[in-house]
Length: 245
Image (cartoon, rainbow, N blue to C red; front, top):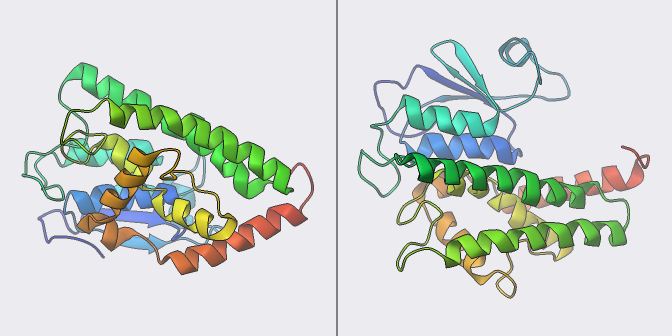
């Protein structure tokens, strides 16, 4: 499946699972670059030989296979796509647009905030789904929303007319954070909790809406109703399980 008809269309294969926000990151990068790829849906309950052989260490998705060689971990996959296909056209931009900036300092800064997204925002936010009680869920949500405040500050510090973390166009941090947008919406529908609520983080809320209007995002994002049902199932599963699950 996917975008554009470039010469590399038969070289790329993405192994994923439809509900994974980390797989969504890889899909977003591929679509933003206008790259065609084959998508292989993985059953994580009965892992395929393709997955086990291409990611023998972690045995999880996403895995990008380029010319028979696997690349694992979503943030590394996004970086790889950007570096392996530097001249591919990004959404709404010119063929020279890159997800990671050329300037070494700006590139290091983007990687810092990318790590912050995973470690400080998404890690506690994942606890929302693993919580066994409403009180525990509220504690995890408070940690996640407090950490999101720093991202609000990054957007507030941007130049006038620059609405993305990449500045005037989508960048590396936008793709990594954009991968969780469907889950942010689904969580709000299930629990009423808004990770990027307009009252607390208005710039992030506006960013989320603007990101969702990109052609790449429209092509990739899952049907929210389907994700809502999946989120309810996960929450019920963890709530009913043992305390250390």
